[in-house]
Image: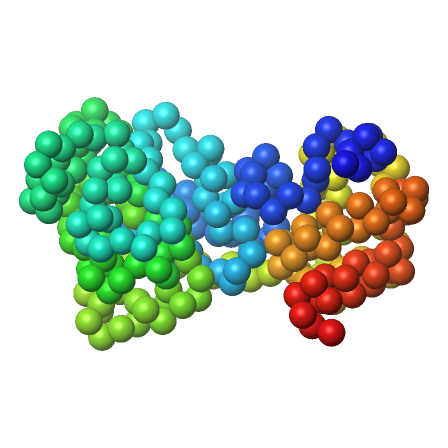
Length: 272
């Protein structure tokens, strides 16, 4: 709606997990380094956590684009699965076919696939997003998959990506064997205050901004107070602010516009 007014190629503040807009904050850069290290060094199980809206899924998609061609991947989203359903989802995402849909058949076929890839010099990565939704029995299945290995290397690298509840679930006494196998951990926190302006300008530039969109210091302060540095909340308020600027026929976003948008969002969410 407002892209033509601002001379943008696309909306810069969509809340979809588009890796083209990925912003390497200090936190996300460290998280990416942990992922690349864990996978390339074949560390087995990696856990990345972060609050809602901190960019975990976008990080996943960006990370996948960084991997060399000899790394085969499967990406499982929203895993409300039993153990057998999880195995089937993994098999399907790797593009494998199993006639007899039993646990034994799934594990046998996956092991055959992993050994074949290892013999060809390939690495295999399984990413499970929203892993806090996995039941303890399914997490135990993840541990068993991590046992698939040669004498020297893990045959599959498993990335568990989730909200902080994932850590609490992993602390369960019954999952202590899994916890001992976690070799890499990282927790993503929101953007630092001094990164806010850089984040917003980064997304505007990717969307094709010619630099005519201006956010005042007071507007940035209001966005910071509203969002607490959470990227998804920054996107929500900035998208609404650009719409408000379009309606007002201005390319300067000031604190009045931001505060009006915040009030509208709070009313919409019932926070009067």
